[in-house]
Image 1: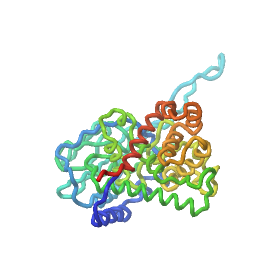
Image 2 (image 1 turned 180 degrees about the horizontal axis):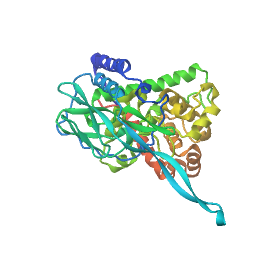
Image 3 (image 1 turned 135 degrees about the vertical axis):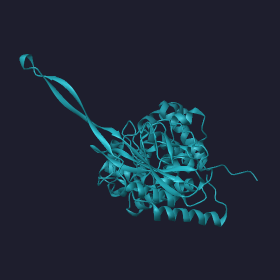
Length: 402
């Protein structure tokens, strides 16, 4: 875990969290031309390589949150520009002499667009807006930029020239319902991977799950299986592992701590907007990666929780999604009863498996294979359980020997 040494560091962390709250630009204020923000189609499991910018500073010794908020505010006033194209296909209709060719309109897709970057000069703390091509990069009179592997709002851009420049945020179009809109976001970069940002991200997550727990208790939500279904440590662990790339995790090239840091940086830099545009191929969305069917079931089973009806809005709201994750734990534990002990780690492992492949497959593996059930769930879930174990140990370090 991240450790805090003494009252000074504790006060410093409190100051960091206050600054995030006071200075962060609301998500709704970052979307151009849309009243509601929905999710962009991004594969969060995509493996991304990153080469640090040459000469980037190893430590930013000033209030980076103030600069991130300023950068986002500047981008919010700009328009990057994009075109929407609609695919067409021809189909034969009718029979015999009446047979004819008709043109059908397909799904609207994003055509040409540009991306705006807010680039910070670390030495002067001045921010410049640079327009870049998503595949070719770009340059201004002062900055030259190369793009990384495309990954939506999480695409990483490399400052080739000059040294001591950092990308604080970007603005680009994303899919919004049936159309597209421009949004502002801070992607991960090693330049921002510093203790203050990571600690802010972890603190945000901790406060989030505590607030969700208190909300459910305050509404008198009754569990269907156990009074102890609100497990904050499990919710915190799953929120982290959902966004750890399994390919990078399995490759052995990255430590667990490094991969956790990437998620915490995105959380600390974006807070309530973090992972707002993350979707999977299965349709899972947001920080807690629910799919529509599971969310509808949970909303029906626990009406007193008063979860949001609209799925997209529900997943964009971290507080609402965190409540849903607790309720899913209870629903899964009701199915898994008799197969889990009262050990927090073992319960967490069972819930992680159910979260990934479903409680039915998890229970079937438990019933048939007993103690070796983790090796008999689907291969993807086996990797997920390895991630759970690694992140759990990071959050619950063994006591140091005297």
